[in-house]
Image (cartoon, rainbow, N blue to C red; front, side):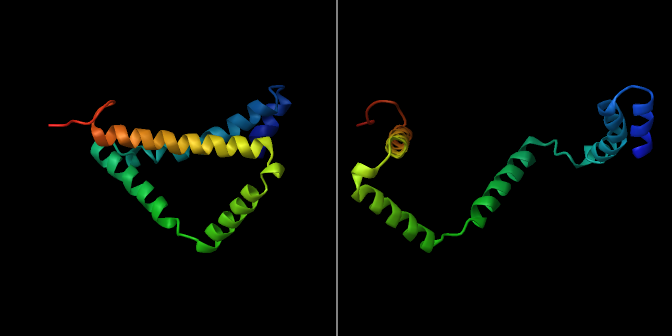
Length: 120
């Protein structure tokens, strides 16, 4: 690799050209072996994606100590509203709006329509 970079520098092509020429065989060697590893069946690709996210979510373990610390910090912040910054109030308002939006979305999905329940 050093010889390719040195040759490119001596010919006046510049460092970037030398590095790109030196890396090209490495990258093509890596990419060439992955063509047969690619999943072409959409059903299998969907299943693999679901398995990946299930594994990621399963790896997150509940942490009661962290929940207790967060709750204590929230209670302390809310007990002194005069010391709350505008940024903290904005984040709290945005979070409340987000919770309300997901509640409304869940209601629409549960009803099966955007307005009213199907009363028979």
